[in-house]
Length: 90
Image 1 (tube, rainbow, N blue to C red):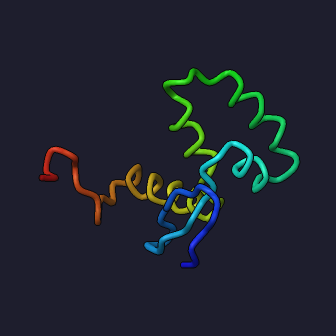
Image 2: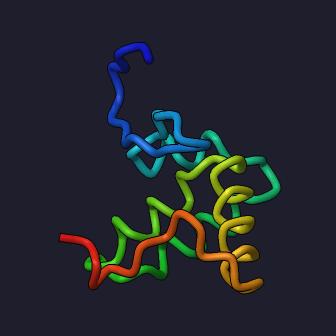
């Protein structure tokens, strides 16, 4: 993973670290043009105390959402392999 001169967060996709933008402008720039207006609307309506969480959701690459959705589908189907309830985590 190369060092970046812009603000980034680290996310994990398929177990591998991926740098994602950590600024409003950087996140907006990575979006498909047809989603940028929606992003602008959501960000402008987000309370300041929630902004970091909403930005993190928008920053995730599509591959991460594919993995997240597959994980939820497995859980809904009753397959809890690899998942640990938070009360069991020290």
